Image 1 (cartoon, rainbow, N blue to C red):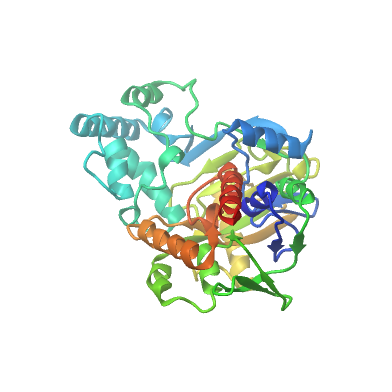
Image 2: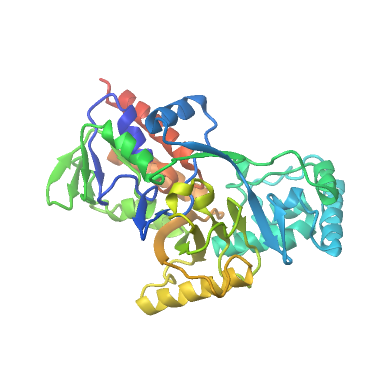
Length: 431
């Protein structure tokens, strides 16, 4: 999406190369057995008016708007997202521990709990803002499951608007009754009525002059400002905008600069297997998605596309995407490993009360996402800064988007990154 947006906003001729047969990168969709799936949930949380207008123009009347229905499954019950603001319904001992933990944290650290901490670990960040109870029952187990590393190894630099921080009064109120207030950046979202998120990428691509599908970038001859493509052809460039995962771009630098060897080694990430499932039973859940912090479930989140729009599943059926994290190199690769993962996921869904043992699954398809989440550790910021500075000075290149920018972000930000990168390219190429 970031690359397509950059080409759309560029004032000069832009060539777009995508190794897939359809545009969009990981923001693609495909249909199998009458079910349409994305690479996990690709929902449009639009906060900038200009981005909202552009997206709605691209989609025409092919979009719906939904209010988020997100839940956490823990201690055998479902509570509304976010956990830290909606403790009501959990076992009384857990509620007391969580509320008292917040009270103690706020009493000890006051209104500026992070004062004096330049780069706190995620664990310290959570305990100072939410106390030990919420950290123990949700923040630490959920995020360690997702990121695959201990909370003490991550910084909180990624949190920003992604982790709501309720006041003490809001925590206490949410322990007694349901909140009317919605928390978080993603309370509402847009999604294509038909066709999956793929239709947005296709709509942008239709307006571009030079999109070459099935063509990948094999190497970057940065000294001569040209790229070598999978076709064997070399193309010169004035400005290179890459949305490849940052390690993949760096591997393609020819010659590889010695100055980037250490920063490249510092980059860490988590991969995800997205298990897309079709169920021959209607409305297996009314949720948009559900979080699973407990270790007994192999997945960290389950989403339900049929609740975004009914047109992604055959009549009388349900669909879901189930997300399972892996450390790089441990993903299921062989058919036997993939079959075993689907079985584990099914058992987990039955234990969670989503599936029944009698349910028939017409589709159970695994979509691998090799670079799913960038790990924010103490080395990330310096490594990324060094790499980006080198690319700018030596290669006339910018690396953007969620994976190119090596960050945690959402779709609107990817579209915005493309717009910003196009404006920067126009400035730098203007004599």
